Length: 338
Ligand SMILES: [Cu+2]
Image (cartoon, helix red, strand yellow):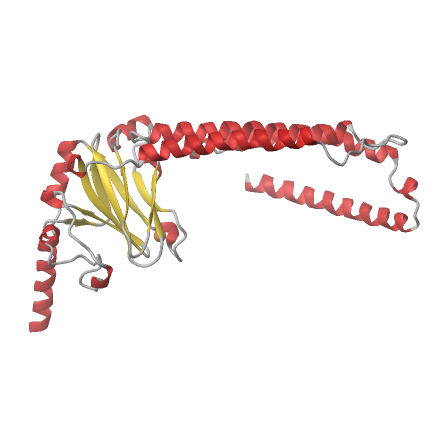
């Protein structure tokens, strides 16, 4: 594929140089004010005729691109609200697609149809109220529909959720990794304050807050149960990151010094999705979608969607914040003694 593109680029480069030489010759002739000689009728006609094959080749290339990259598209959405996002996306794609096709057809067809002919003058008018009304009002209506529909979907998806009915957790972003924290047995996240950030306390958790003691902190991968609302809070240690979970059609900025939130309900377990995609290695993934530094590209964490029983089993195996800090302080004490 790359080699084919290289050949195409070389051929286009040669064509471009040939045209530049021609332009140089034409401008030399024009300097002698001999315009009739410079642009011959047959030249204009030839260029006009090229417009239609170019248009067809251009659309064929677009279709080829869509076909060859279709495997990189996301599988069906794995969250409750995801289908609404997909419908909204497709609605926008259809509208912009219609405009894209119409504009290009008209652009090249008119250039072909109305090429310069000797003795034929173009109609000239300086102003047309009717025309200006059409090209102002029609796009205004279409844009209003797109924006109002988009806002309605967004308001529905982000409407507040009862935290008692949800699994409360947090995603903590830093250059260049993610850490997940769960509310623990009380399902409440302990308070945090960026001023408490320390080597021993990288998540800046308030250790005096009892709600924090049973919090579970996990790295590498995190699990969520299927068909349960997951209420996620987001924080960042350093710069703005963006928590992006493409399969759940979910994304939220992680901003230093403040908490953001998003909630969604996963509907397909990892095992089910592996069957659906016929890919035994399929995994849901959390990515950073804001260029945040040198290894931003690799800032990711695996997400596992489990049955509720499996999720509970996994969570029970994770150490609590208190256990972890006790273990940590024991190590510190031993080091001090030695
Ligand atoms: Cu990042």
